[in-house]
Amino acid sequence: MGSAESRVAERDPAAPPTARLVSLFAFAFGWMFLVRNSTGLLAPQLLPALGLGSRHLGILAATLAVSWSLFGWWIPSRFTRIGLRARLAAVCAILAAACLVGAASTNLAVLVVFQLLAGLAGGPALPLIQAGVATWLDSGRRGRYMGLVQGLGGSLLAAVLGPICLVPLVASTGWRGALLILALGAAAAALLATLALPRAARGSAWLDASKPRDPHSAPSGTPGARRNVLLCSAVGGLLVAWLVLGTTFFPLYLVSARGLGAVEMSRVMGLIGAGSLFGVLTIPHLSDRVGRRPALAIGAVLGCLSPLALLTPGLSTEWMRLLVFAGSAAGGTFPLFLAVIPSEAGPAERIATRVGIVQAASELAGGVLAPILAGWLADAHGLRVAVVLASLAPLLAGLLALGVNEPARLESSSQA
Image (tube, rainbow, N blue to C red):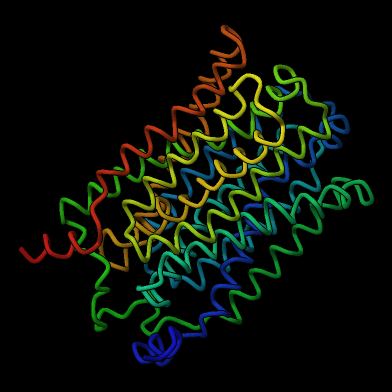
């Protein structure tokens, strides 16, 4: 039995090498996500320089979240006749333009435009990239490849290496210089997408209609397939809420309630990125072997460990760090509910649309509504409430994940 690349080549002689595709997609997605995180990393210099405060930072974060979610659904669903290569190159080019606008900012209004453009570019990136993964690469290893793209790009490049490199860069070149360098990286991603990715066989889609249907997908009208998209949207909203509540409220809770110093708090928080990277490299791969449903359900419930570790009185710092790392492995479920399961819930030519729908719902519920609600409750009842909500969200997500249909069941129901 040949390698994955040889099997893909047998299906489509024009298919590019697996390693090249995974590397390119991971680089493009990682750069998109780094730009998304850049406002917070630049804030210590950016806000004083423009005379802005914390409330303005909240406005910018909400603007990006809404823009990211809405454009992530609208663009993949409306521009289906433009090849994925052209669309990916276009969003990378828009990202470069957004960074240039951000570097030229002189007030809040221009920064809002920067966030809107960043959402216009970044929102469609994941649906387009994972549609390419699902179309070109071996469907039997879809979980592994989609996990690698989000793990190497979103976790390693954007969440681990990005801050390590960007913060010293800001100190040496200023926040404007850092945005200019981000613009160069986005332009490089656009150029690589144009040169390294092949054209579609018919120009309108990556998957030629004459090719055999993916055995891991079901017709879009299958009731179980539609339910999977709805369930992934609900699970996504809960798990994005878990992630946003953690990154937003955990640092303050660790310092004010647990009495940790700034250095020790940063070490605990750093484990979130490390645990998420471990999760995205293991849980999607595990789903290829044991099934999407158990991997998603078990991985989601793991997320309870991180907030419970913070809430447990008398727990040593060492145990708390271990549980935070283990609980952060729930980040490995993101490729499953955002990409893998939606990609198998219908025809290949609509993958980007389905992924965009799940991403939009997850971002709006978990990235916009959840932190607003948690912040209001925390002001009224204390920070502990926000951490409790972060512990309940993954538990509910795990229970909902039990309703997901496996690809084999979708296939049998569509043939019935």
